[in-house]
Every structure is written in structure tokens, then in C-alpha cells.
Length: 180
Image (cartoon, rainbow, N blue to C red; front, top):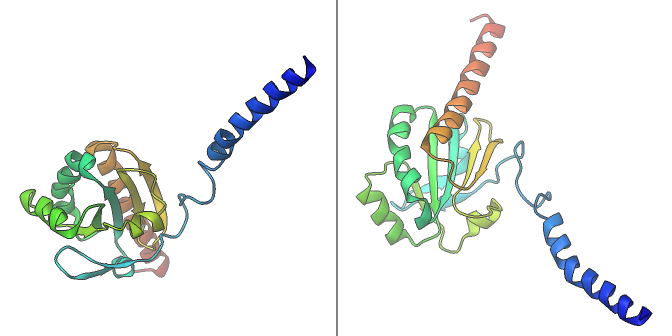
């Protein structure tokens, strides 16, 4: 009886241990968090131009990792981007090849930056957890929002607008401090 109880307890622990190890890593430092510096990158966009995260310093950057499941919200971002393109840059990173990504951009008249990340190097560098994963990076390169899953256009626009507003308020405060 005692031996069977010991085996049952040991078996239960052996079965639960991998689950506990997995769950304990879900919110571990191995994922990018709000307040972290966005990892730098340099890639060719679908039109052939090299895109470097550093070139967007001074703008709010929306880094939108997407797959075919995320098409509805992604194409709806275009009007917001057109209205705020002086203050914001949208970089949509697809897990497909350049031809498929370019076809989607053409058919939906998307003008923001589109990257094809077929080997998923950028996806892995940002430790994204699924599609869509959206990072909003402030003007100085710090991650200010992290969204896993589709939140819809209206909440996403509110988050982008808030980051644009934060930058404007900081600039106004700086100008006041300098007496301009």
C-alpha cells in the first residue's frame, strides 16, 4: 500500500512538473516588457528600401507582427496612419514572403512600412508570442505598450493617440523650461 501511494504521488509530481516549469516562464524576463528598450533592427522592406528602427527616433513606432489572421485590423490602420504620419510610423511585420506581403499591401492600398519576416528573425528578436503582437515604441525607443492578440481598431487608435500626446506634452514642457 505504501509503495503504491509513493508511486502515485511521484507520478503526479512528474506529470505536473513540466506544466509548472512552462507556466513559471510565461511572464519571465525572457519576454520584452513595457519599459524595455526596443531591440534594434535593420531589414529590407517589401519595396527594397532598408528600414532601421533607429531612423524613426523622434516618432512613435507601432510594430505590428501579423499573419493572415490579423488582416482586418491591419488594413484599417491606414487612414489613421495617413492622418498622423508626421508623428507616427507603422511597421507591419508579416510571417510570409515578400511577394505575398507586397500583394496584400497593394490590394489594400497600404502605404506604411511592410516587412516580410519569413524566417521570423524579427518576430523572435521581439519575443512575440503570437499573431498579432503589437508593440508601441515611444520617440526615444522605449516600449510603452505591448498587445498580444487583436484588440480592434478603436482601442489601438487610443493607445497610439496617447503616445503621440505624451510626446507633444514632453516637447511643450521642454520648450517652456527653455523659455521659448
